[in-house]
Length: 135
Image 1: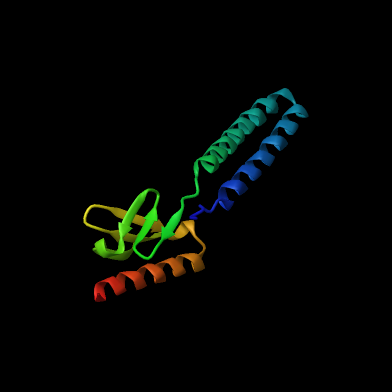
Image 2: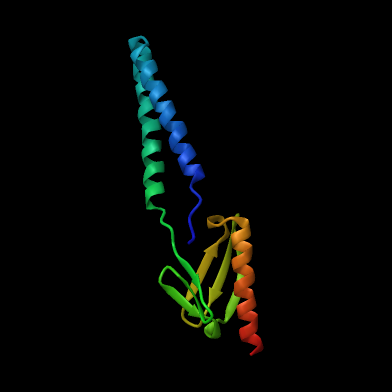
């Protein structure tokens, strides 16, 4: 399973949730002139919490399956004997293992995995790709 790293989203939601609570508490115990400012900041912080939680819910785990004949990710299957290109690409700060056949493309993001898992998957796919090229 490729499980997206969500620690940043969870931390953001917790931090801004705490800020929302603190700002609402402060607004209830401050003069009227400061109350509006605190409530506006609390509303903004609450909006950030909502966005973080929505993004967290929408990030879904995807199953990666590597068999003796193919690699399958998110309903895209590429057989090892149909692979044409296997490369690691860097786009900005993200690193992807990209596998291409004649008609399909599959990309595995390094950011979605622990470094050891990514290295293991890259080694396994390269081994199968090279074995296919030698045959």
